[in-house]
Amino acid sequence: MTTPARPRKILLATDMSCRCDRALDRAIQLAREWDAELIAAHVIDPAKTGQFRFDRKPASWRRLPSPVDRMKWRLRRDLGTAADAIRILVEEGDPPEMLLEMAAREDCDLIVTGIARDETLGRMLLGNTLNRLVRGSPVPVLVVHDRAVRHYRDIVVGTDFSEASLQALLITAACFPAAALTLFHGYDVPFSGYLDEQDFKRDLGVMEKELGDKFLADERVDEPLRGRTDVVIAHGSPERLLSDYVEDHDIDLTVIGSHGRGALFDALIGSTAKTLLEMLEGDLLIVHYRPAD
Image (cartoon, rainbow, N blue to C red; front, top):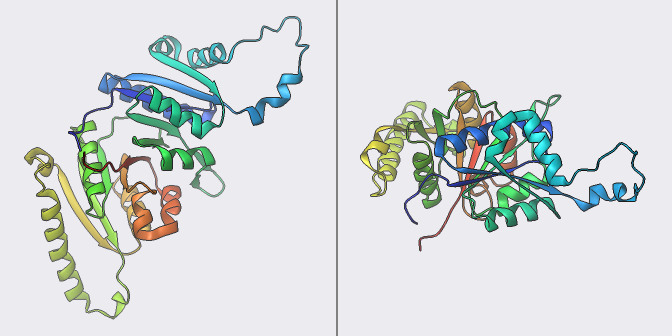
């Protein structure tokens, strides 16, 4: 693995709906912070636009814009002159497949996208496009839920103390050098209710220190990074513990690693990885594991 660096190119995957407005604002903020190029990508799904192809008699006053011109108009309406700094790509095809292809072709280092929230159920919903982006992208994917009211200052990195988790930590540290970081590990012990509570808490504290010290002792973790990284290990349902920690500590960004077949927590809690993504408050960065060269 090469030394992590800040993204040079950011791909904003947008469907131009209001659910992507917050992702747009965050992508602009990060592009300015990193002095990175921002590319707004929109994919037209032929399956959803076929009916308009038969309208061959538009009103006489109607000027039919190209998809690129219409997207530029939408961005300028929302951003004013700030839209001039955004390069726009509009293509037709299967949205997740085309977005991944565009990100690869443009050599992007990060994909940013929005997420829907069901106000009735009070939880985030993973659409097909987002799910396929998260699982198929070789570069990190930032899923934005919150407004970009401030820079990412408090970040929690979900960890299983694996190489994928270490890479996620190193990439996060490189992207956000001023943020306070917390390594969070949640685990469940069968029949823990039968254990002596005092002994259990003492053993947990010893394990927390040993695992944390060993993980942060890796030669790739320098002293400044060790100094701004706390380690928290808790007993219970991993997805519930992480969700509660994020909410209780007003975390700006949650980061999880990926082993290539899905989110890190697939390895820990199987099918509840999707539940984790739906439960979390705030923004989520998914960093994909890359084997050593």
